[in-house]
Length: 430
Ligand SMILES: Nc1ncnc2c1ncn2[C@@H]1O[C@H](COP(=O)(O)OP(=O)(O)OP(=O)(O)O)[C@@H](O)[C@H]1O
Ligand SMILES: [Mg+2]
Image (cartoon, rainbow, N blue to C red; front, side, top):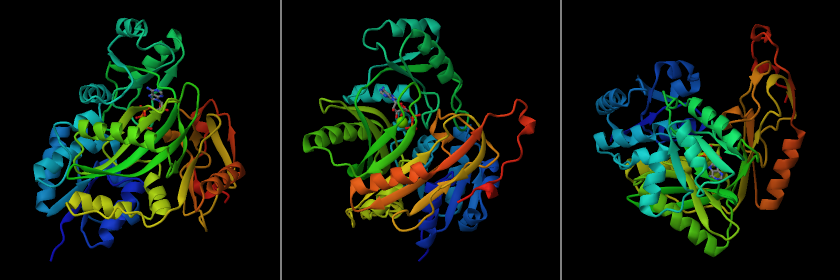
């Protein structure tokens, strides 16, 4: 019997690679819809896994939908997935067009456009920060005078990701600059550059995310993840840990809000990643939802800590088969991101961990000799490693110890970018 084909919208990145590997290992033909430029950058391993691809233009969603659906029909595709935040809306439309399990295309925008998300949450009674969409300076000043916002407040692009262009402003001057930054922030596939900026009330508390899988409208929460985030004006993630055990009353409050958010965003078949802040009073505020598996290697953490085959489960949900979601392990896992203390040229690196017992995953992605950024977005991470074990305290301690051993040397960038020698990963000292 021929198995249905599996189509990934954008197959780049570690999560998509693991999904492609899992699908191919189960005997599915794996296809990718991507851009010609992105396909050119796929490595030989990924290209070897793919049975075929279609190069399309994601900046033109109507055209991308028609081309992708036509390709999928020609190749017997029975499951469509994406782990790319920018493509979740398109994925819902492609699934609907092909009549394969997917999310409600009529609501999918709510998981991509934070203004639509805020309205959808408010309409569904999801507890979410008071949010104003401002289109110009006059709108910004009016919003800042609104006592429901106050300072600090958060300014963010409408459809950004990876914390890019998000600023916590403590006063009007900072807010004006932050609005400019948010407006100028450009995401993938032509996202960004819109005049609208969101100004949001600041939710104080501890940040978590909830990783869920919904099948036929029934949601299973796989884990609550604690996020390590930098303080200050730029909130950049520095690590994630799971599973986090919260008091039962808090878990109920969190799950109630998350499930309402999942429904509001039309998530019927697939993964979701909901970011929440739990206040000192135990109340849960939903910051945002993504209609996809979490990034930042959270899938790897779930796999190792809980023994759930996340990639197989995602495939099953996309194929409309019952997914195996019962944990087979009771461990703990954490990821640490290596970030640069300052902008400049990365001169050297040493002490970065290698994989081994309790360290199942490492990934270095910055090039020696290349320019690095002061952390302002998740995309500025230099590398990541995962630590697993039986006990939370020992895993966290080991991860911190390993992180302290990482030494990076960053020099001020030369005035003339021509002086920067070509980046090379071969200079990395283990
Ligand atoms: N209303 C808020 N109150 C408090 N902190 C906030 C608020 N909104 C955003 N933040 C902080 O800024 C970070 C980034 O914001 P947000 O999640 O909206 O952006 P994003 O670009 O979608 O991020 P990512 O893709 O990394 O999840 C959050 O993780 C949180 O630390
Ligand atoms: Mg976020």
